[in-house]
Length: 198
Length: 245
Picture (cartoon, one colour):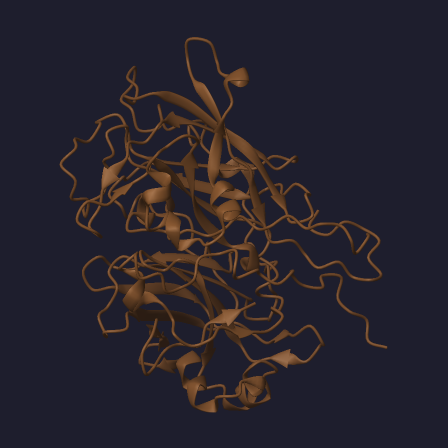
C-alpha cells in the first residue's frame, strides 16, 4: 500500500452525556424488557476456569465527588491468558453503569492470566478499562493490575516503562475480603489515575 | 529476527481531531478532565482485540425506534426518518460486525430517564434506544423520529441541537468510540458548547448527517446519511492481506 495514500480521519468523539444508560444499559435505565439483558451485565455464562473474582470501585471527579452517571467497560483475558477466550462460558467483556446513588461499578469475572505483549514478553495479569460519562469528551482508557502480583507487575513491559513510579499505585486494584478487588478511578487531582493513549 | 504478530496495532489517534479533555465552555468537563498527559504505548493484545457480537442476538425491532417501545398497533410520535450509513476504518475498508447502540430524546426533546429535568412530555410509545450490527459491507440502518432540541443546565440558555448518540464497538477496544450525530441545517449546532469542544470545522462537519431526499420513502420517512470512521490498523511492511477481515 502506498505511503502516500491519504488516511481518513477518525470520526471525532463526543461525550456520552448523562443518559448513556438509555442506549447501553436500558434495563438499568428502567426500560426493562427492551432487550433480554443489558449487554455486558454477565461475563460468566456458566462454570468458568480459574479464580472467580469481583471488581468494584468508584469514579471520582477532581473535587473528590463520586460520579453517579458514569459507565465503565472492561475487556480481559481468561484465566489461561487467552484474549478473546475460547471458553464459551466466559465473555471477557463487561459493562457496568455505576449505581445512580452510590456510584459503584461492579464486575463479576475471573482473574486473568498473563498475556504476552507484542514482543512476546509476558504482561502481568491486567484488565483493560474504558470509562465514559457526562463531562468526559473522549472515553478514557486505563488498565487494572493486581497489587498481589508483585513479581509479575515488576516484570510487566508497560509498568516498567512508566517514568513516574509514584503514579503506578493508581493502576493497582487492592485486594479486599471475599475475592473482591477495589479499583477506584480518579479523573483528576492528586491521585489522578494513569490514562493511556493506546 | 523476531516475527511481528500479524496484528501490528492501530494507527495513533489524532488527538487534535478529537475534543480536548478540558473544554471550559462545557462546564462539566472542568472537574472531569484528566490534567496529566495520557501515556502513549502500543496497545497489547487486550487493546487490539474486543468482544464479538453475533447478529442472532438482535431482536427484529431492535433498530426500529418507532416500534420497539410502542404498544401493539401504536407508533412513536414525530417526523419519521431513516438513519443509515456505513462504518469504515481509516483505510476506507468496511467494518463488519460492528455493534452500534444509539439513544436519543423523543420528538419533543425529552429523554426517558429518571434524571431528566426538562418539562417536555414523554411519548408513551417512544423509548429512545436502538441497536444493530453492521453487515458485511459495514452498512447499518435505524428507523426513528427526529429528536427535538432541548435546554440543558450549562449556560443560562444553552440548548442542545437535535442529535442522536452513537456507541460503536468495532473489532478492538482501541477503536471504542462514543459520538453524537447532528442534523444538516440545524442552526443550533454551532452554538453548542459540546459541539464546540471540537476545534476543527471539518471534524464537526463529519458529525452532521446529510439529508438524502433521493432515498426518502414516499409518504413514510426521510433519509439521513451518516458514515462513521473507526481507527484503522497500522499497515505492516510485509502485509499481504487485509487486516480486520
